Image (cartoon, rainbow, N blue to C red; front, side, top):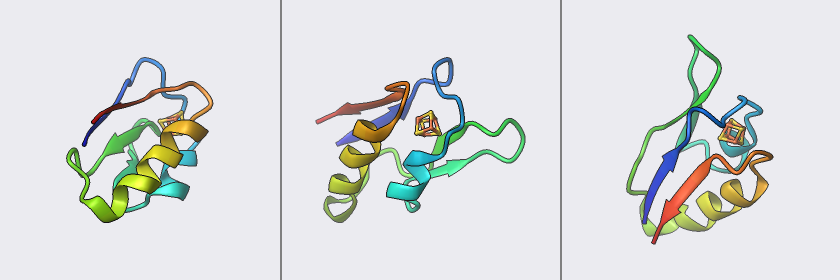
Amino acid sequence: MRVEIDQELCCGYGNCVVHAPEVFELDHADGLAVVLVANPPEGEQAAVREAAADCPVSAILIEE
Ligand code: SF4
């Protein structure tokens, strides 16, 4: 799995950080989400899918 965030769409709601804090973080400078682990391990992938489903602006892009 490969995960990216579309910075143009992200509004910094933080749902992704709640679902997968090991993979996403809110940048302190601009408040938008950044990906900490672009290729999340097996154990994180379900949480990443939940984060993508829960992102209000569909800014999380997953490539399987
Ligand atoms: S859930 Fe979506 S809009 Fe919210 S911080 Fe994460 S990527 Fe950005």
